[in-house]
Image (cartoon, rainbow, N blue to C red; front, side):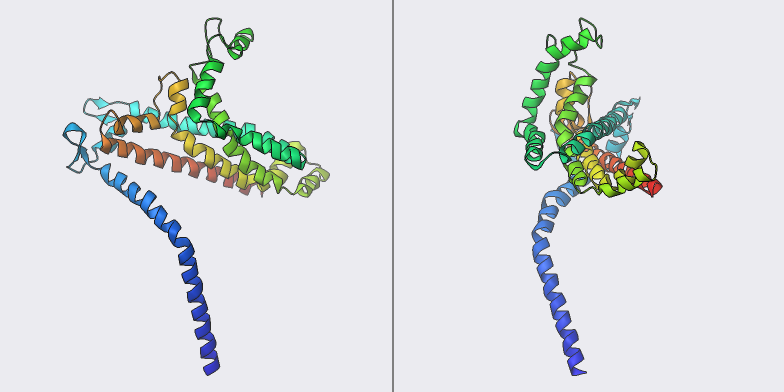
Length: 304
């Protein structure tokens, strides 16, 4: 009995030491998360229920008016401005994520099939855009898509646009720049999944008479699903809150969530309403992530 109690006591001491080591290793991360994420998020959440005072100060009373205004119900009746901004931002993030997936999937397979030296070169070329500032890349697209550029002249020659028109400013310019800027966020996780792909499953599907689409659906897609989900998340989150690219390439004609937040915390001096917009934008992003993950999970269940 004494030996058994000593064994149990030793196991308890070992578990305690492991718990202390785990807490010591995870502690700095938790402290960082609490100080720079949870506390600021709590302050923004509390501020969203306050009112704008005189000279842009934050004052009482507690109210839901900020969320009513964001839903479109103001003093002058219903105004769909902010619901349209929410919907437009969600569409921009979703469209950018799906376009990046469409362009990034073939690129990831192409890079994975290269030899090692060329593979490293290709990955370097993928991340090279990160070496340049976002504003510089956006201004470069203004010149490339503006009147008189060779891309615009090619579009005129193909009769995509009229002789007196240009690709910038416009929706095409916004989506083109968004895809080029966020494509690396999609390619890198996709490449990591494609690199580990077991091609024997695809060969077995082909031996059983499956066509190429069925091989991809049943033999390839379930294996690269983690990369697809990670890529969609990494693209959708920043694309939903993006406002620099739509503002510069869209001609400042279409407001996004990022524009609304910047306006309220900047010139508008309405921090409570800006906090409400920020929280709702976070909810929109989380809702989009939930839809992406659920849709992908449902497809995976259908495949299985």
